[in-house]
Length: 423
RNA sequence: GUGAGCAUAGCUCAACUGGUCAGAGCACUGGACUGUGGCUCCAGGGGUUGGGGGUUCAAGUCCCCUUGUUCACCCCA
Image (cartoon, rainbow, N blue to C red):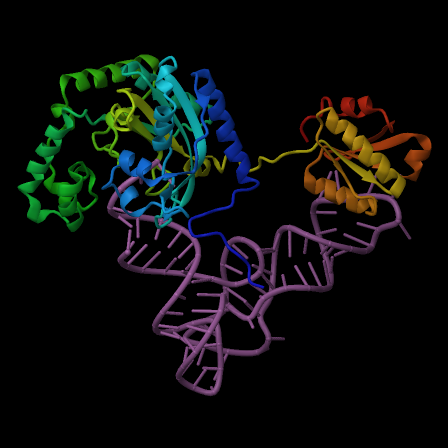
């Protein structure tokens, strides 16, 4: 019988990697709680329109990367390619603007995009994201970036760069867009094939084409910061001031234009040099018009998403040896001892101690071998002798030291473990 | 969607320009050591060389197709 495999771009995650994931998730949860974020659980499927409206009809994500199908009622349904659209839908649907502003949410879950997999890119991938609704203040931008800074520092991810930019608002972005368009239109003939398409679709993308000739002819291109309106300029300036005041280091990168249509003003990425072409591990920005576009009130918002696989990849080396360790291994040598061991194990588990009960038909040698592989601290040996004397034999695997202990007093076992929490 | 590379044991890799029964390390199982693990030694199980077709006296090796995978482009976390 042939084996089944996962779909392309889809992976199983289990030990030891899963412990890295737990570390990221738990640390994020702790840090987010400090900033007042509550978890939100959003569905994996939505009406397709939720995504086409928010992400943008002509973006690659919507045009060619969504898992879209009709349900039995003929409705067009899509697997979520990102989280923000659903959170905004939820915010509008449930009138969450009636709660005190600002409202802060975080989510964690799988996203789906039909792309060719490569390093750091998968078809089913996981994001931890956060969104704040109801604040126009640059202070919120700075606070959010500072929160990410704290998260990265707790995870000991030092070798990353925060890059920020402003892409203006509804009012001023069009003027920049047309300035860019005009600038490159004059040189259209020299552009690469991709850029000729970008000229109409997404002129901002012309700024970071990797083609060498394109890179050369863009010398002297219009700078976005010269075009954004005074409101956007002031916002951007204040964000930078606050980041400096908080000691959050960053670099300005006018190329961060993001691929989703809904962003306004502040956009940012946290990047690394260790992941090949997929260097962004966190990305986000402000989206002040999206709630209104979704039929809600004019509520500004800002958010980000963390790429779990990418972050886990960065942490892999430092967490290589991380495993769940159980404290005791009971090694029963006969059936009566097995009965006794199993019931002792259950009593210890009630006390919150993780223990393993070996199977009674193994030899002591095999018990010890098994215990060694399981990385336990102590082996508790119970055989005929021990039962007769009412004393179990304990053996510490790190140094082979042995002793005896009352066979059926739980406190004896708990005190044995105290002071020996590591192997 | 485009391009390039790679698919041999559970894992990491061998096998001269096609040519003895496709090997090793690690892992796994058992033994040496019958109530004492790790170290050492010994033994064992496991592969129709991703799948299909072709060339040839002979294919893991060459050709075609297919699937998977890796990396990159587009784009994106």
